[in-house]
Image (cartoon, rainbow, N blue to C red; front, side, top):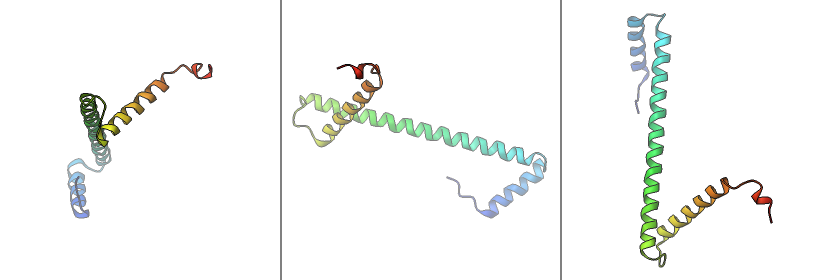
Length: 105
């Protein structure tokens, strides 16, 4: 993201020391670091959510194409999408099963 070299960092530290003074500089550094960390975490969360939504949209498109073909003569991409959706459905179903259901014959 930012490529700050040693001399640029020293220049910023000296300016910060002159402007804020030695008492307030450590607190300012912690505040800036915390803000950058928060921004980075938010950006990563947004990126992850966007990737997830794009994947869901792609699966939906492939499923729709497979349904239009009557689930016959599917491409490998459509078959993979259906398999992934079936696996997701199984994991959701298994997570909501009653623990005593597995003990019944």
